[in-house]
Each structure stands twice: as C-alpha cells, then as structure tokens.
Amino acid sequence: MNTADLGLPVDVPSTALFTDQYEFTMVQAALRAGTAGRRSVFEVFTRRLPEGRRYGVVAGTGRVLDAVENFRFDADVIGFLRERGIVDEPTLKWLSSYRFSGDIWGYPEGEVYFPGSPLLRVEGSFAECVLLETVILSILNHDSAIAAAASRMSSAAGGRRLIEMGARRTHELSAVASARAAYVGGFDSTSDLAAGFRYGIPTVGTSAHAFTLLHDSERDAFRAQVDSLGRGTTLLVDTYDVAEAVRTAVEIAGPGLGAVRIDSGDLLLVAHRVRQQLDELGARDTRIVVTSDLDEYAIASLAAAPVDAYGVGTQLVTGSGHPTCSMVYKLVARARSAEPGAPLEPVAKKSLGAKYSLGGRKWAARRLDAESVAEAEVVGTGPVPTELAARQLLVELVRDGKVVARESLDTARERHIAARAALPMSAVQLSRGEPVLPTEYV
Image (cartoon, rainbow, N blue to C red; front, side, top):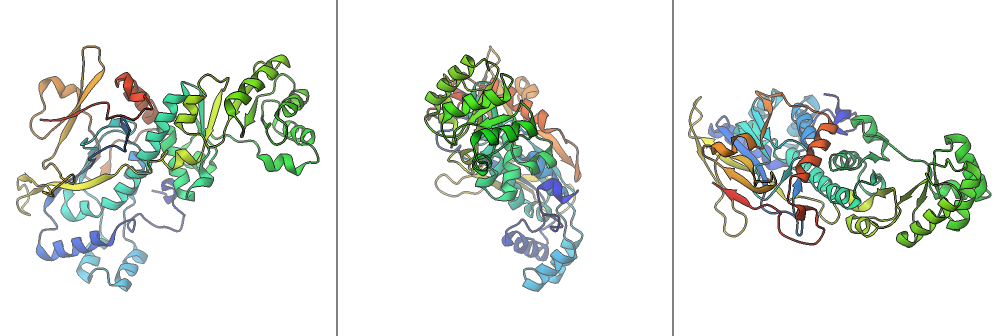
C-alpha cells in the first residue's frame, strides 16, 4: 500500500506508530503473562451523539482498511521503540513480524448510526487487535464528524451544489481526509488538489481577491481570467463594488459567463440583487456561488436566495462545532483460555455513571415501519430475529487479515444519501433534538 493513499508524507513508512504507548506496554505484559494470544473481540461505538445531532454518519472506513494493511514495524520503527526503551526485546521480536490476521466487520461507509451502534468489530488475538485502537479511533472519530457536518449541510442545501474549501483552516493531512469525508456526506467537489489526486474527488477553483488586487483595475483582472480560463469561469465580484463588478464581468465574458462568486456582505440581499442584475444584463444562465464562513444554519437561511452553490470551509473541517464523535474501542468478548477454539465469553467495563459497556459480540439491524421508514436501531448478542435477518447492518470488511470489501467513494456517497432518505423526516431538522431513532437492545 502506497503511503500516499493514506494522506501520509512519503517518508512515513507505516501507520504502526499512530498508537498510544500503553498499547505497546499492554502487549508486552500480555506476552509475558501468556494471554496475548487469547482470541478477543473489540467493538467501536459511541455512547451518545454530539449534542443536538439526530444521527451520525460512518466515514473513514476505507482509510481504516488502508491503515490496517499498512500497520507494519520496519527496522526504523523497531529501532525507535528499542532506543526509547518502550518495550523489551521479546516484544520487539514479536512486533517485527506483526501482520493483522484477524477479521473485521462494520457498518459500511456512508451508513448512518446511533448511540450503541457497533460500528466496527475487530476480532483476532488480543495483542494484534489492541494495537489498532488508536489508529482506528483517530480515523473514524475525525472522518465521521466531518461527514456528519457535511450531511447536515447537504440537507440544508436542498440539492444545490456544495464545494469543500477548508484546507487552509486545518492541518494539511486533515484537509485531505476532510475533503474525502465531506464527499461521502454529500459535498460535490473540493478545492484541495491532494484530495482530488488521492481519492478522485472532483476539484474546482479559479481566483481569490489577490488576483483582482494584482491588476491595475478590476476590468484588467477579469479580462485576464476570461482570456486564460474561458467564458465559463467564475469571477469573484465583491472586491470593490459588487454591482459595478457584475456589470464589468458580463461586458467582458458576455451572457455566457459561467458564474459569479460573492464572499462577503449580506449574502441573502446581495444574491437577490446580483440575480436581478444578471438577468437584466441577459446573463440568465450565469450561476451564483456564495462563500464566507458558512455552516448548515447559514445555508438554510439562504434557501430562498437565488444561489446555485455554496463554498464551505472552516465550519465543515471542524465538524461544525463537533470535531469528534466520542467513539470508543472496547473489549467486549475474549476466549476463556489461549487454547485454539476456546469459547468466547462476554466481558464489559462496570464503571459507575455513563461510561458503561455492554459485553458480547453484537449484531445490529434497522427495523422499518409499514412505510419502509426506519423506526429503531436494534442491537443484540443472541440469535438475530427472523424478521430482522435481512436488515442487518454489519458487513464483512477483513477476513483472515485480507481486505475483502473495497469500494469506491461514490458507492459510499450514494449509500449515505439512501440511508438518510430512509430516516424519519425529523432527521434533517436543524433544531436541537434527540437521536431520530431509539436504540433497542435485545
């Protein structure tokens, strides 16, 4: 696996150090105790959705599969662990031949989820599974948060196009992952070329205010852009006087001007004025793109405006106020002994308060009502009820260490659209509320 596919610098050889130190010290102690080989089941879930959110969105699954494949301990990584004295020599020897050989099941990318949903189930020896905790959680928590924000913005946009443009507002590698997650959540394109290169997401972009300011006049800037990029380009019209800029833009590009972009001011009022002016100038097919610190609420407030596309940056790549999903990775079952074929038994944390866990390997299904609208997320550890057998949510992702479920981003994106459409209508309300589906345990 090429590390570029993970959004990593080319000089990073693997994902093996995307871990917390206690994962290594647990492996060392378990190897010494003879328990490292016990078959174990870990599950990823969240105890609650971010405040006010009605549903979550699974994103990052494809990146998790890449990370698991690329989880290797080469000589440099082993040397680092040895130099720091993080683990002993027997553990280093074990790590040097590490290859995940277990099974992974999970909600497919783009699916929605709710509190208690077993989003990912990782099965194998304790040692090989526990090492994956941090890398899995870091990917799923980040990407799912971005996808959830993107989904809310997509609902608010009502079919109008959405452009992800937050690369300058986050870490350079997070920007690539954010663009990918936003595409799963319903965005149409990105300004980030690394995301386009690595994941095939459509890319867009024309010019910033600096290009207008570079030239002696706005007219000179517009002419230079049209001469270079053609009449179908998007001209930024709010550097000086918007009305004058729109007039100049149509004079230079003609009625075939592709679009104008508005990046400041009262967007609702300005969009109406610009639309009227464009129509009066004969540019009826020229689109209007708006940017400027948008979130789902601002997008919803522009529903009545003659806007054709929205560009969203900061609020998207920070999860629109919720940059993580609080997912956890917990041991829910382990073999009674290290003997091959030893039966599994449920285990669970017994903490007081909200930090509880439900033991046992779980399945999940979504029950529908008579109109085929989802009415409950059903989670269980025993036999799957016959009426829910065809509605199970977990799919096989990795078998015996081999990825078996690669799919395109477009497939995940289409799945999300379908999953969201099957929820009750209240799911897309932006007002604060409880999860749109209850989670039932059987």
